[in-house]
Length: 455
Image 1 (cartoon, one colour):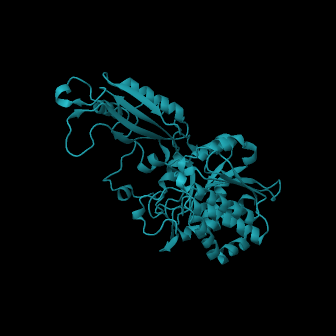
Image 2: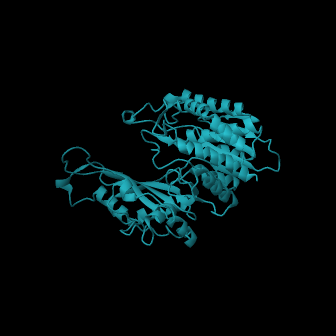
Image 3: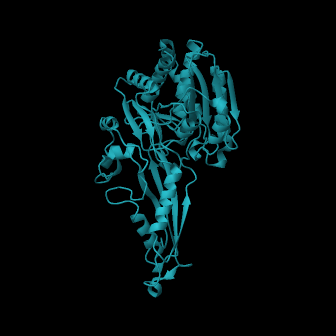
């Protein structure tokens, strides 16, 4: 571990926070074309910072959309490992703006937290890595390993151009392992190794009956109601024990091992009723809520619409009804195969008298898992524990990060998810924030980790 780098971070903390605030002040909202120039400004900020740090090669790469910032440092020597560091500089929209207690693009510290859009997701965590690289270069004159940097500007809109870049420039981006800090810990000051992510896929079901809305008195009892038909289809896809009843859905599921169930059991997860307002949890038969969330596949109806939505009553049989469905997947499940099984089931159980169309979600991803005893994971856990002063826990997450699957699929390398966010960061919501304690201890973790990797 570099004591000089840690001392640099401590002595220059205020200057580093000022620089982070400059980054956070740029409204790099990727989904809104109004912010096209802001996206470019954020990319320019990163390009300038990486040049100042002393990276050998720094460039903005054209993706067909928002630019990707790429950089290389290769002076650690051929025997040193090479890491691919991934992050993103784009942020979510700030709506509803009236719910923010301070300007989302004028960073403000309150009660030990830095409030701004992107403070946690993902500018703050990206910046921590760059600050640690700066600390190493300004104290030791070198980094302890070779580094390739990939910071994109489209993560919040599905990374729609990233896969092609990673695939077409495979040699340029290839590394021995990857590190991503776009996740968090199970609780503030609880170091957490995230060793697995769920995949996801989805479909949209559209049911059509009559070619126009009908008078329910004149035609009720004579034609099939599309909303009722859709409800029949949906009710047949999962039972009251939260078990998905689509044939073949579980066929390739990698089971939860006893060791993994022990790891999950030891995690002090959130109080689901308290956090959500429900009266009790509901999980797959035979599994706890934590086990289901972290390590078992899910099937959820995300939205339904059809018929009259206004005030009062309108006595009709609606012409159409639609439902949106997504599934979170675990290792062994193929997103395209799951879509096929869902579609087959829908057509199998659809009542007569209606037509059904199934639209498959374009953006899907496979699940990712690295073995908890991987040496890179063990070194990360050690670095976490030493920095936070608390034993690191191991979890799998119910969310999905498509770039993880892409990096694994294209490069076949381990991926270490070093996240420092907390459940209270309010990602994608008004009043997003990041604890300064995580900022400090997170950078210490990174200093320790880079030294551990090349020890």
